[in-house]
Length: 396
Image (cartoon, rainbow, N blue to C red; front, side, top):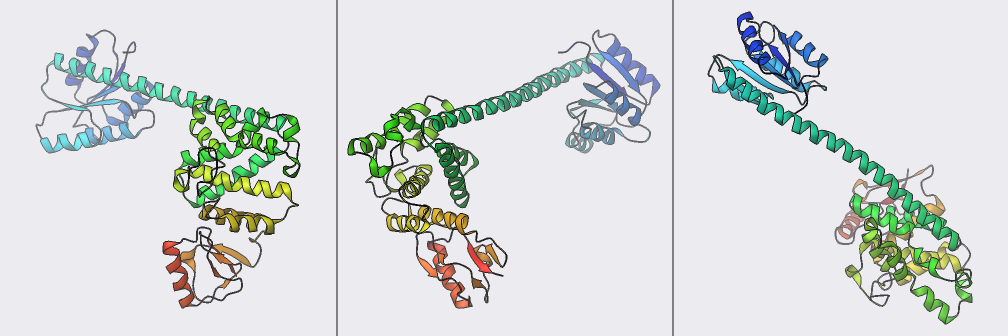
């Protein structure tokens, strides 16, 4: 226990107050302050940062219940222990007092040794709680420091990739934006989202081990041997990142980013849900990056790739969501006269502002279709087994 723990005694009977304070004074090490009412007792408790309050139940003004409640609700005194003194053996009152936060009761008349024993016991509890609170505060500070350090590691790895792989940082940021957008539609957990984001930012890290002659070539200029060399960058990326404990899951996503949905990918020929969810997102993003590296910025070519390969190379739902993201980003559908709503908000008379697809790629409606109740029922029927994850765009 800390030196000189502070005890506040609140008792309106001067004889009993003197008895209690003398009993406590005989026990060296206590710093004791007394009051004859709840208001003065609370003021002393705040002023001296009280560790424990001993209070009579019957006092002028506030009784012991009300005083206890004020002490326990005060931001500076929430951890202060509270012992009630009462001359009445009333179980209902004891239960009420304990529910308000009182830590124990003593029934008058009491033995001085019993009071000292209870005070010592509760002071030990108080100081253990204080130590735990201090450790929690220190732990929070350490976690914040570690988080800052970890974010620094991510930034350092990103810079390392950028130094070796042309335009990798920009691709990593774009990949992270797409991956987070898709993850939000699937309502992934915050921890899973963080891993997916880091994997997207670092998905090209395995390329830093390759020679410049390979990295600077366009895909159309690469030899078969160089293409084979590049095909192994996910494994190399895993080897680099798995050495960092916080990136263990991220390294797995990086390893499997080129697995195909139908099991024809590499390195492990996983298929469908065997492939980690984040890796399935990266597979689609990699395809988008490949198309954009071999052609001018042609969203029609990207769309064709996504629609053609969904179900074979790509998870169909993810492919459709990435397609939606790219259309929104490139054509800016959120403009005056148009708005984005969920399927559940559809009502008759609304006019569709863009083609409506389900997650698996089924086209339900074309742009400019005016909704009827029958149309909405058909949409909802599809939505139940093949959800429309990206919502609906309508004209105001």
